[in-house]
Length: 163
Image (cartoon, rainbow, N blue to C red):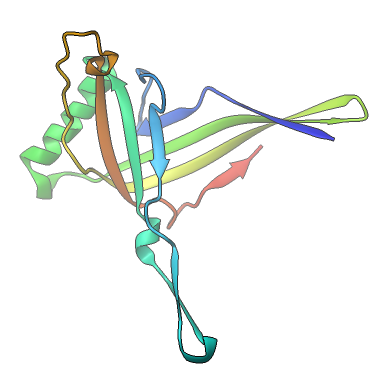
């Protein structure tokens, strides 16, 4: 039995705005930089295992076409955070991978559409947008890189896979 997964037309939403002006490469990268649990081994091999709440922190890096409507939208949110940090309403978001799972059994192909969704809340910008000036044609100078952190990526609404 062979299995194939097709991936494409993924969706990234910040607040209620769907991003469509994504750049090249990993234009949306959601990561979890911390471990969700830690362990220590003590005397005679006794083990201590503790849940690590910081493991729920998510980082989302977005590569957006510089000057596009998406860049204008995100820059407006970033400016609101910088202008009045304590008045900034934390962001919500969603990253959805659209997949098709195919199996071939006895020469017959079956296909099942799947959505692999991450719901995000408590979002904020963790850094300012860098700029590149390069007279030698570096295409990276046409990209705005936004770095956001989410304090509640798996707490209230965990990752779901559904058909």
